[in-house]
Amino acid sequence: MTADEIRGTIHGTAPVPLSVLDLVTVGAGRTATDALRTSVDLAKLTESRGFHRYWVAEHHSMPGVASSSPAVILAHLAAHTDRIRLGSGGVMLPNHAPLVIAEQFGTLEAMAPGRVDLGLGRAPGTDGATAAALRRSDSLNEGADDFPEQLVELTRFLDDDFPDGHPYRRIHAVPGPIQSTSPGGVQSPHRPPIWLLGSSGFSARLAATLGLPFAFAHHFSAQNTVPALDLYRESFRPSAVLKEPYALIGVSALATDDEKEARRQVLAASLNMVRLRTGRPGLVPTPEEAEAYDFSPMERDFITSWNANVIHGSVDEVRAGLDDLHKRTGADELMLTSHAHSAELRLRSYELIADAYGLPTA
Image (cartoon, rainbow, N blue to C red; front, side, top):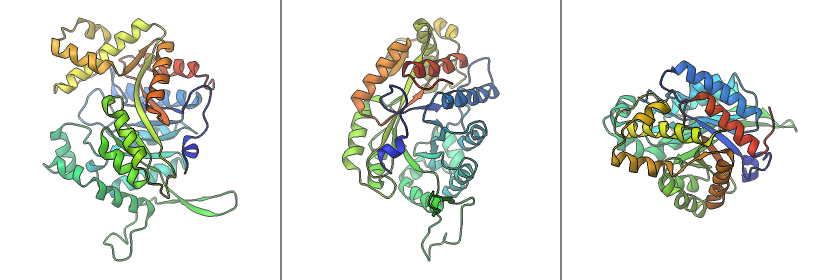
């Protein structure tokens, strides 16, 4: 594929495709059921407004994030959408047997042919104890160090092409590669494209070496964004999968009709992050709780640094921030994630951004 082919059609005045990263946020006073219903509403809204893809991310042991099982959520979203690409941003490969992932995403591909992405990460997506429970191992380094080998094994299962003599030669991930028919009547195998995710240079270099598309977590590792993208582009080797580098970045963005409300919602999300980073994860607090919270000087320094990379405020402020970020990074796609206690404001944010870029109306 070329970058133009993977990019799809650009609508409106957006410089690159706009996509969605959903953490299935659970706010205080709400439930996981509420959050999952919001995800369906958000997927349907962003599909109708011309967003390119919709990804969910694997997290564990975090009460405020109801996305521990991306494949299950994606199956639910597939039943409520028709066109938008669906995928993982990502599945944490060391937490799972490659065969299991191949079976899950082969099933998703059978449900929604041609619109499923398999984004893979090497981090645990949780704390060390939970990762050990997931992996049945006390060693976190073991999974991370074996990531390239696990990736090869997963790719073999997805393509159903282990060589003769391999111990897995007679094992097949079912459903396997789907046979799609081209306009000329030619049968060709199709399976979900693999993306590599990262927040440092490791995945950037690996994605470049393998000729795979790359997704960088700018929303929590902004200082590494440009170096990682430069490394990816400089090291890229064309492959049967991708002819030229293609990189998207995850961006935290929240637009509101009242810019003061954006600040309040971002403060609540910041308190949630403070609690997570200090081993006290919980539901996303309300803005009122965040405003009443007595932040320590160290916590205030943390949220000042954290919020420097959260694009928020009026829709004009957010568009200007997104345009500037695109110019600075040259990203081929911007994947927006909104952190707020209010589900209604999260939905409204994507509507405002779509309006700002002249994306199709519902």
